[in-house]
Length: 129
Picture (spheres, rainbow, N blue to C red):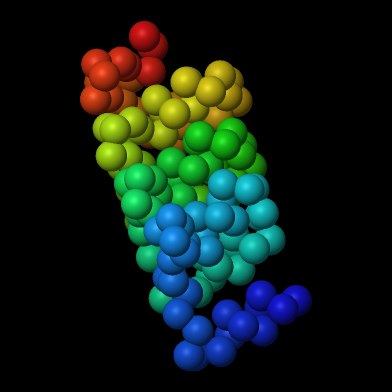
């Protein structure tokens, strides 16, 4: 796999971001590329909570895109994942998943204690309203 070969090179900066501020982990998580995520998460140099220019971490992208299996890979990783992060509009993972109607993702977020049911975004909306 080309990605593995590149990631094994010590000069590769794994936390590089694109023009949107999204990292390799952010893209892999949002697209649900589980094998790539596991490979990236195994690298001790990766910033698990790196946010893009919209303030979205890989967890927020997983929730927004409804990648149910990807959340398991992120949350079950032994390194601390910020489960309560919010984007620039103060939307949490739970808020994003509810807004998109991702029922299975909402169940997973509750299972992993990614709370925030009563937290309001910049428009005053909560995940329930």
